[in-house]
Amino acid sequence: MSFQGQIGCLRSRIPRRSSEGQQFASVSAQAASAQAAPSKSSLMARLINGWRTDNLIGDIYGGLTAAVVALPLALAFGVASGAGPLPGLYGSIFIGFFAALFGGTPSQISGPTGPMTVVLAGVISKFPGQPDLVFAAVALAGVFQMVMGALDIGQYIRLVSLSVTSGFMSGIGCIILCTQSLAILGSAPAPNCLAAFKALPQALQAINSQALAVGLLALACCYLTPKKISRIVPGSLLGLITGTLTAVYARLDVPRLGAIPSGLPQFRLPAVPQSMYPQVIQAALMLAALGAIDSLLTSLVADQLTQDYHDSDKELVGQGLGNAISGLFGGVAGAGATMRTVVNIRAGGRSPISGAVHSIVLLAVVVGLGRFAGAIPLAVLAGVLLKSGWDIIDWKYIRRARALSKSSVLIMATVLLCTMFGDLIAAVALGTVMNSLIYTKKMAAVQVESCTIVCSEEDAADGSCNLQLSETKLLRQAAGRVSLFNMQTVFTFNAANGILRKLLPAMSYYESNILDLSNVELLDDTAALAVDDLIDHSNSLSKTLYVCGANKQGADMLHRLGVAAKLPAAMADPTVHRRVCLQYAVQQLGSPEILSTSNPDSQSNPLLGQPEPALP
Image (cartoon, rainbow, N blue to C red):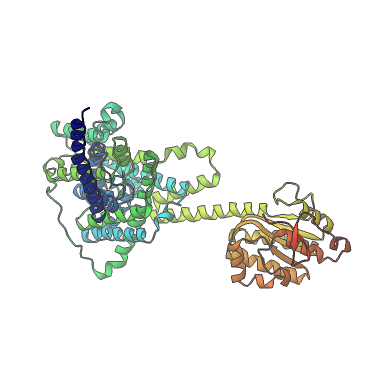
């Protein structure tokens, strides 16, 4: 290349470098401005849990599919609750929208559910002809759920055992089957199982064959629709359409929904007399508790399908906000809906956008639905609900009942029967108490069994105490005059009495006893007071009790309750190493042979003037 060509080449490079510098400065400025003012997407991600726009097509399709599934169920649950089809749709719209955007489970679809419908039906029967009280209870339930989320109560609701939730959900399913079995026969649905059983003989004598026919047709569509078709049109919606069209064109004489007003929902602040506050609060607490349990169970299902983790407390806040707004606009109470959530996820929904789309679609349907929905036969809705009730029953648990423990099956059956024939919240409370007592008994047995008395090499042969060679040698030298009461893992209230009954009689056989807490990770206040009883009993026998190996938590508990102050002065620290404590106890026996014992492989112990092993 010529000299002039080289100069030209250099000149051509100068603007390029300047341009690159300007571009770099521009990018730096953009980055600085981005830090100063976050983008809309990052701001939305901070405000809305799980917000993302990279799966927009999947979220839209998931929301549309979930809305198609939700439509017949919202109508059916609204009618079954006694509030009506339109409040059922309002509940799906408001709860589905706000729980999706402000909840803690991004892919969850919320709305009226079987359990919430059963409870709401009880509330409506409690306040007949007083819709303000019903919707006030729904709105207040939402407030209670938001408070539960703010107080981090969601993490405790997840601790309800499978036996309790299985019995509860199965009981809800049985209630739906019992009450809707009358509606499919052409009679008015019963408010509860007892009323259904009482009314069944009369309903069988006055069967409306036409209502039964369209109801069975809808039920058959729910069960027999091929999977290829159900992916496009769910069986429940197909049953609703088929049953309704059959009744309309065949001009069947069957009970129908009747005229439904269409249009946007109107805000209305419920008026509650002061004398009704206690009843409304009680109903709201029941709805809030059940909605929390129902929603978080669905969140667990969503976690399994998406391989993600939900935020329990944030989910309660979102559900509460949705229920509160639903009640103020005349909608029913709702919760996370398992079937709709599963459909959404399988259709590609992953973010709160899918839940919002689901609600927007239902809102569009509500605007022009009234003139068409009035022709829907009640028996058709009953057929859809019978399928829903059957699916709610935990058949997987029931099929495995023979392989489960008797106590687990007993809890499940008790909760199921109490749910069907008693109070729903009482059923959950009773099951939780039963489960806690049985669990406490089992854990107590494990703790008592793990407590061993070691006074010789043979007693420590199983290795559970992890005795070192020097410690075994000291026990041999003590010749059965010193014992180790070895505890494992935890020492808590449920085993305190059993351990006392095991150790107190044994203390009289030894001159000195050592309570070894080296392997105890948790020592509660009841167990610490049990240690106090051991010390008092030892003193009454003119014996000596030492405590060793406690961790910081256990030692703090013993000091705080004044138990450590009762220990021998030379061994007043409950965290002292077991080797040191055992050596001191053996020395106190006064045997010349024992006093001359030493461990050549250990470090010097200034407290005892004897060798001490290096602590692990």
